[in-house]
Image (cartoon, rainbow, N blue to C red):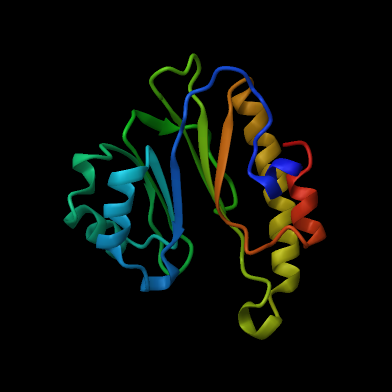
Length: 181
């Protein structure tokens, strides 16, 4: 995985650049206007975590749909909701069980097949004064299964996974999650 550290991806031949912006809204602490401005200037698709119905209304009030006309929105109270907006047509890729991930097929110009963009959220292992570690461990194991299932369903297209893994490369479980691409 030298590309992770040195920022040089492996040579995959001809490609199409896809700019994906992902953010955790942090239970209401995000600056919506700044985020939408950044997205308009630099993203093809955006994924958002902790998306509540209130946040959906706030994003719509910015006029986000004038640039990102397509969306897959699964708002929920607290930290459980997701949002995905795209400049290009997007449809739900496959039903996601368990509530920690959403995915959509996106019709990106220049790509022969429609890639899948997924947004994932795993609980912070330090939540609830460190009592969520076991839930984090089972969540990251479940994420590996969900991502494998998504890759199987999406075959042979590319799958982009963004979100908040609440993990770093020095955590064995996160490294295990990344094995196999």
